[in-house]
Length: 109
Image (cartoon, rainbow, N blue to C red; front, top):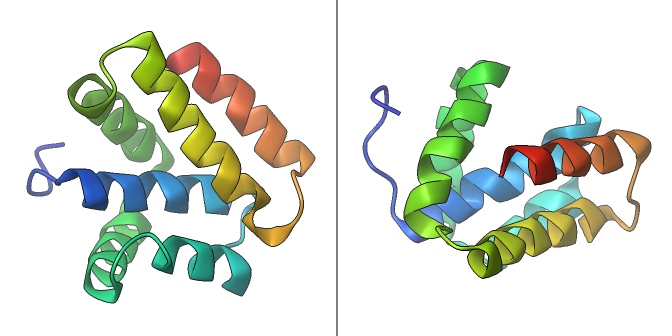
């Protein structure tokens, strides 16, 4: 997390949604549009740039480090997982890769 400034909740949410959207190795227009409905364009572009500059392990470590700040309880963690599931479904599919990522996230969080 030291490689970027501390994100506010909207920025972190955009990051999570991008992470979910890219679970099947592509981010569709529908998925981008779904994210843009929740965050402004400036936030999306900022997080998109940072997201694409990170390695996979950095992305996971980032999620884990912010999880305690924005989702410290079981109820809040379930909200985080629900947010990600909605993003998985933004393109109308819940692919095998997305399902597997959801299982991993449930174990990590």
